[in-house]
Structures are given as C-alpha cells and as structure tokens.
Length: 303
Image (cartoon, rainbow, N blue to C red):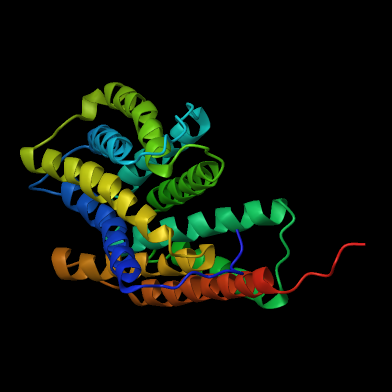
C-alpha cells in the first residue's frame, strides 16, 4: 500500500481514530486493573474471557453487517497461523501485565510490533532511506535502554513476554493483509479459533485459577468492547487513512496508556520510561516519514 492517493481526513475519521486509540490503550489498563486486587483474576482466565467475549461480539457484528450489506462478502477461510498468533499475543500480553505498568507494557508492545513490521519489510526487499535507518537505530537503542538492567528496569521475563506479544501481533496484522474476507469477518473467525486455545491454556494453568466478579467483568469488557468493538471502530477509520497515517496515529497508544496508568492507578512515570518513549516513538516516526517519502517518490519507467 502506498500513499500516492491520500484520502481526505474528515472530522468523522478523526473521531473514529481517537476512539480506537482510546480502546487500544484501555486494553492495557483493563488488564492491569483486572490482575490487581480487589478485581483479581489469573492471567490465563483473563485471556480466555477476552477471546471468548471478543469472538461473541465479532460474530454478532459480522452477522449484523451481513444483513445490512447487499453485497455478498467472501467467507473467511480458517487461518490457523493468524489464530495462533492472536492467541499467543493475548496469552503473553496477559501474563506480562502481572508486573508491568500500563505505559511500559504498551511501549514494549508497540516497539516490538513496529520492529517486526520493519523486519518483514526488509526481508521483502523494501528500501529504507538513510534517515529511516537512523530512526530505526534510535528506536532499537531506546528499546534496549528501557529493558536494560537497573532499578527502574521492568522485570526481564515480563518484558520478554510483552515483546513476544508484540511480535505475535505483528505477525497477526501481516496475515490479515492477505485475507479475502472483510476484516470483521476474518477477525471473528480468528477469535473463534483462538478462543479454544486460550481455554486449553486455562485448563493447563488451572492450579492458579482465581476470578472475582470484578475481574471477570473487566476481562469481558476488554474482549467485547475494547477488542471487539474497538477493532470495528478502527476498521471504519482505516477506510479514510493511508497506511502511513494509520501507523503514525498508533504512536499515541503508549502515551495514552502511560497517562491512564498514572491518573487511574497511581503508576509512576519514570525518567527511564520518558527517555525510552522519546527514543522509540521518535525513531519510529522518523522511519514512518522516510517510508512515506519513499512511497510517493516517482519511479523510473521500466525499459
């Protein structure tokens, strides 16, 4: 996808994008709330409820969309790799937030997603200008600084799990680009396949099972609202956003999550998090700008 024909960004698109980013950041906050007392729930159960409730919501939305859409949309073929990646993302995400703050977790997740996308682009032969390479190096250095040993560093295992969640979400996003079905239908199919995998993990981890009513409610809200409906809102916004604009908008998610964690959960924003955020988000922004310019640069005619 290129940015040659950039659609106009309307007030509706801006509103939908804001709601989607709030939903994405809310996933981090809901998970942190759910895992802590008094709304305590174990990570495996949180992930299971999130996927099951998200599957139910997306199936309902896809069926309602099918009734109102006169054009017959292609049915989604089972994509096992996408479903496994979705399950891995939810599982690693849930366990990582046992000890990570909302802002730190979102930053690691976002950084890993973008680095995965860049790596795939490089392997596919995408060319990066020199400035983009500098931005990528800055983002990697910021990521390394964030997780480097020290008093303010996040726990290594949790950081590794969240990075794995980011890689899994990057893989899942890339798989979605090749689906012939509508994004809502394809995502509903992936949620339906991933839900039993999450339930199996809960069964394996049943010795750690515990769930309060509040924890269950937060998990369902994360799945049905901020994951299910949040995706539908984001898809509606994507219709009027170029790939570069969509990627740039998501730079706001770690910031929103960090502010939400500070205001709602009394989490501390450390100097390390601020420096790493500037490096990672700034570096990614430079790379995105470089990719945008490369995308609109005129090509020489083939002989």
